[in-house]
Image 1 (cartoon, one colour):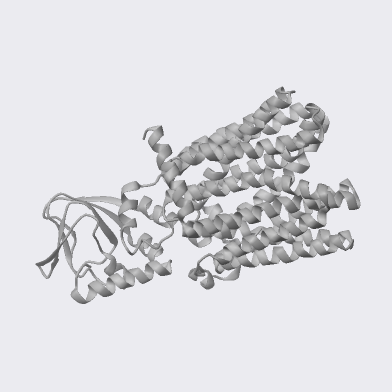
Image 2: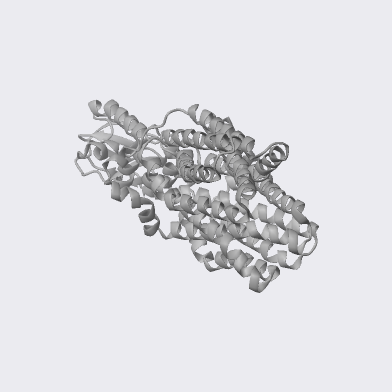
Length: 548
């Protein structure tokens, strides 16, 4: 596809994601949550410094990240056990109450320890929001392109939050004090909750209730342990977050010790990183129609890590700002491609818990990077430390490049079977990621004129949809109807566990796609709306003995 056509198709997908009312509300909820997190993060650091000094800042920040990392996998169980909308609403209401409590304590001059405890609790409960949001998004997206576009939009919102949130918090802090900033953060969580409240209520995952609680708690870890693709993606994201944590220290050290730009330079570097993320979002819109996201994922590592490593050679603020902008672009490639690949690869029944494990790893490596970077700077100096840590990302990408290209091959979208399945009422209610996975599993089958694809009385082992050609349906040897491209057969024998009720014979050259019994049943029976649609089809066809 020419670059102009690709851009046009990408922007259409991006626009479609915002025309989807459900996705739009979910993105607006994410905006409120992101801004609130950044606003209150700035305020709690300033509050801790004023009340108890620099050590308190480090302790509070580490406690927030580390404890959230510990609880994230276990809180994510709720995203696969009950309504994801309900999980997000509960998180928003709890966060608003906790941060509201911080507002009251700080305004009244209450004990700082109580404020810190409330802040840590708010961070812990926040760890359940992102997995539920990531797990709900594929259910709301109608196509794979819309899913990628929605992840891109969410990443753009995060980029905006990285500089709008701190800027807003800084202005309010300059005019008043931390207590009012806490209050603004609480309002942000209320906004997020109101947007989530407007979402159509979703169903609780039915299979979760049948699992023992012990199995549920470790399902995210087990899913990653079984899938090499998930291991590579999660591992690389963990390395990136280690570098991001180190970057929190790099920004301060580079601005003050290397660039001699002072506190203002810290703000400029943070802002440029966020602007680079926005630029990456504008360029990354092409990802919405690309089929090879793993390659873009690896490219993001080269750009982000290479920019940090190159920082060692620059002593001018202008050069550093350009590198930070490039790093922002690389970060967008990593985030959008990585999250989309996770949603495509994780098993639907455990996707929330897989993202819970990811959230835990991200927080843990973020905290570790922030702790390790000062230890490297002390003996090595800033420049060597920048080059060493920045080089981790290109090295990790190169070491796993073969695995990334393998992911590209296995995660490639099968366009023709996807279009055929999407047009069938049984599959239409399925989340985009489930439908995409089914299309990948579809097996192309051909038959010549007069060949029987299935025979009456045989056991049912596959579901079929016709891609090209025509076929006749015969009951007891008598033709009853003709099937054309887009029509399907084989569902009754699978859903009712009965022998084939008819023979289907090719009229001329026939090309079909087949789904194996377990793949078909796992998708259709595991999703209530699809099961209802399938039962309706069976009820319509079975009395007439129509099609298998």
